[in-house]
Length: 207
Image 1 (cartoon, rainbow, N blue to C red):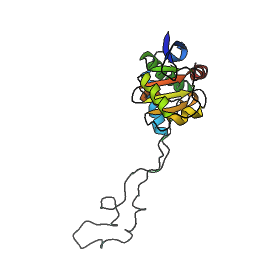
Image 2 (cartoon, rainbow, N blue to C red):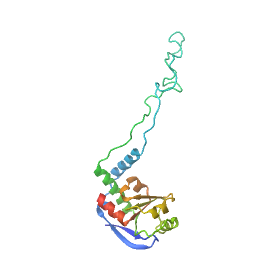
Image 3 (cartoon, helix red, strand yellow):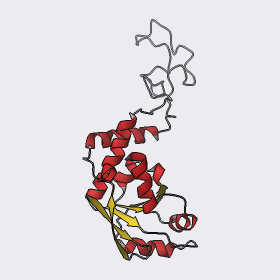
Image 4 (cartoon, helix red, strand yellow):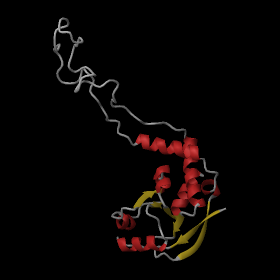
């Protein structure tokens, strides 16, 4: 059974919450998590890298000197690859770096990452958001009360404008919706803060 401490926005303890075992207590698969992380990083690449071949480099249309009689090696263009300023051989060209991954493996990777965080005691449940207007000081006090790490991932079940505006200018805080959680977000976070409805959403989606 996996549990997580429940605190309110003031940092006061409100007991514990039993986390769904189908999502937060599975046997972690490091290989699948690694593959999912590499896929996410690859899919984030723009793929706009490009290099010029000898046909694309400016100049080099004239033969630099005659074929025979100079005693030098024959040359056809000053833009050949072995010349400084010449074209590139087998250089990078624009392409897609996107990778595919089966749906079952993607879900297993997310469940594994959540289970690792739960086992290491890095998940905290936020009980209610009593915040009517943006107050960064309130969020900072909450993070200090729960002894959050250098990187904090806040997972919400639905949008909350006041909280999102309060945490927007805190560089160590990343705030996302439960449906957008990724393996990279989980693995790079030192502390994961979830609302109750976020836990329910994740359990329903990935359980």
